[in-house]
Length: 170
Image 1 (cartoon, rainbow, N blue to C red):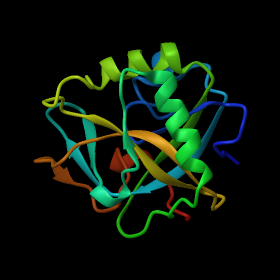
Image 2 (tube, one colour):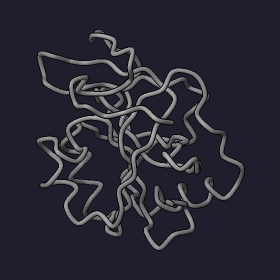
Image 3 (cartoon, one colour):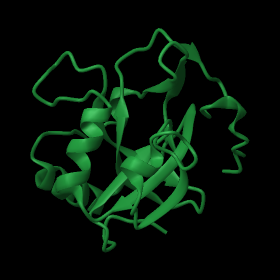
């Protein structure tokens, strides 16, 4: 079970090319301390021209936005996760939550991959702190890359890629 009090200081939720078995996983996520299947509240969209998905979440699900102060972001995750965390309700996007112990090197690399620049309001993706529910039913906060809106193809099952064989059992 993952929780913000664990040894791992950084929790990240991935729903696309960073998941296990996807093209960016090994390079960017190798060395993860733990990985669990999980879900967030939101709508998933396929961006077939680019070969990856986008996640749109309701504003009320966002606890904080990522910055270049990576240690501060991890502290926000821990501090905000100590209080009551609302479980995700409504439409769900499914993926995996990863625990990492190296946010100072891990976050800049993944931010670059995702095209996220905290200093640029025009960044396609934003790193947001969201409630994540694991398959075992625990709820915690994790960082995920989200967009404000998407012109992609809506994925009603909330699983990308749709043919992945992932089973929604929670």
